[in-house]
Length: 219
Image 1 (tube, rainbow, N blue to C red):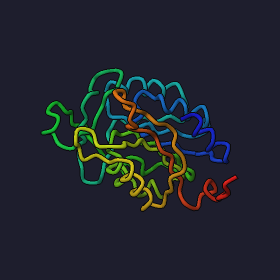
Image 2 (cartoon, one colour):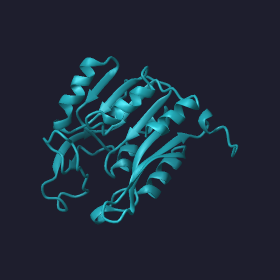
Image 3 (cartoon, rainbow, N blue to C red):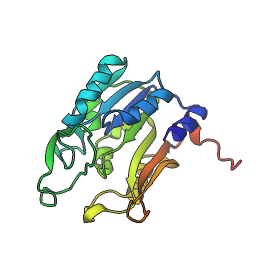
């Protein structure tokens, strides 16, 4: 991930606003802040077990703002999550699509990114999504924000876990392609522990028309 951000930086990308959806305890934000220290950061994370760490970061570091909510598509008041809850590590989470599939799933109040960040100003935005297969719903609720976004870094899945109707890589590519973004880079790949099969990763998308994709040379 740091290599991918460095390549963007070397290509001339300097975001003024970074939106980190699924901020967890700020691990990704720390990597991004090392590359883009002058940006304003908006960290979105619904899990109570992670918020104390994020709020402490916001108190310590200028231009960091924290939002303790889930984000999703318009008209959806809650998002179900399982595996995190009050735990402080915030790991092992999953977003089931039905309460019947995971009986112990916790509903979190949710909004859209457009509603949450309507007052945020910025001209070169970097949007990072790590929402466990819920990416398409978040994108649906981000039309206005995406219109001002130059780079999207999104977690992807290669196959549907437990037959859940979650977004996988082709769905993510198609959704962002329809909104004017081209696949630019792959920031990370993660294999399944049992057999090494590619399970997930992080992909980088850049808005068409950006200077980042103006050079089509193969050298």
